[in-house]
Image (cartoon, rainbow over all chains, first blue to last red; front, side, top):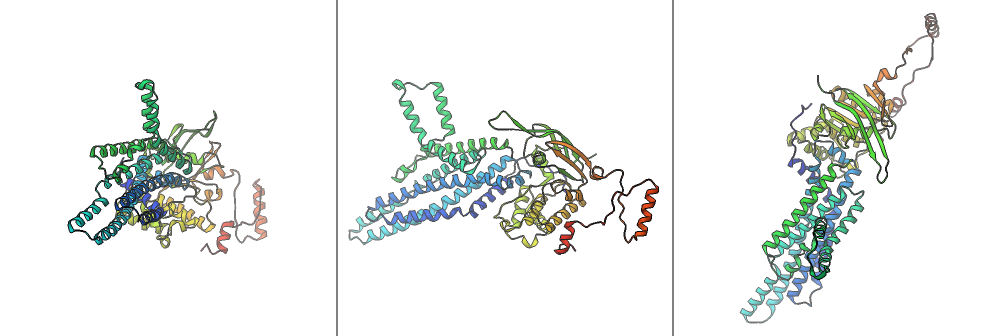
Length: 298
Length: 282
């Protein structure tokens, strides 16, 4: 038998064990079937744009793809995260895990990391599908353009124009922000599931918070504009609005994709600010989730 | 002197009822000790506080007052669980993992290194008789196999204490007997076992001490023989005794002012008979 050994208060190895098992759990639940839907949507949308100019075609393709990526990663984040804790409690696997020398913080971090890995795999696959379809479309447009009879310098300029309209480096920060937004939603869903009574309740509350998060900046602007004579808000109102912003993340701040699609570059400072905000929300939600979970009676 | 495997002192657990000013007292002023190397049976009807006590010992639920220790370490501290293996009632585990993957996962949680983990996994699968099902997914395991893989995961870090909640619930007699034999084997290896069960016959067969909980209060506690033996009676089982011999024995007893309370043919247990006719007993 083992003699008592020095227990490691924090072990990345244990977190990784839980995270990799969570990823395996979600993969074996066949959540990647939605990728087929994504691929069909992108390929389908690329086929129904033959009457558009090539600039319009590429813009619509990027718009549809990034929009679909945003929705699919959000759905995946909410649905996958919502079932993790209730399933472990219902099957009593949580008892066997926490009856081992596993701190509750490590359990929460492992579960979240597992979902974040799943989202990373999902967005990488979606990006690959998007790039393949965009590349195929580009090759078709290039072939059509090359067939036009025109002076060689004009033809070269036209081909360069087509290439410039397809891929641009700005898409990468856009996709990273989509990932970060889904990660915030996953952390928020995990937090809700630590006190919710069921997966359905968790999903409903998470969806409601998502929509409030999109609407709250509009409501805030309307509220502040309604103050008589454009007066400064009272300290109480400032604190209240701050609290609302803390609980309900301002998801409009993560909507950089619209600018990116029309070809505008996202300034580095804005990207870093948005990324910092996302990481801040993830940290706060994870910490609060741990505080709830640490005192949860199982 | 080494610390007891489990020490419970003045333990009380009160569950408030949400939205009401009432509360439920699940455990009330419970004190008991389980010495190292014992098989201890915690008995009681449904709702008597057995599971709550077990969960408090394992740090899954916080006590309202009082304290619990495992080998001298406060059971609210995570490190106390290095010495405990737990098998909950009706465990399910991750259905998508095989038996080997399941033990590997729990081994990782206990910080076992790669080579040691693989060796331990093989050893445990052999101990619980699941070598042939090692690469099958848990989702396809029978009830008895689930209990056995549950016992294996509880033993993965070679704990000195095992906490078993209804380990034979829903298992057929042959499987139940195998689990009982495993528990006796653990005892031989010096592992302390805290057993919660409704199957009193089985508890009687394997436990050294028992505690009986009723409505959260420990109503009886002690060595099993002392609790259930009838002080002024003696059991005598004879083989090949003729009616004349029996008559003589009765006369001797009467001369000594004794009394024959009951005279009957000894019976085998229904379990033994069942195992015999179904080929479960060698």
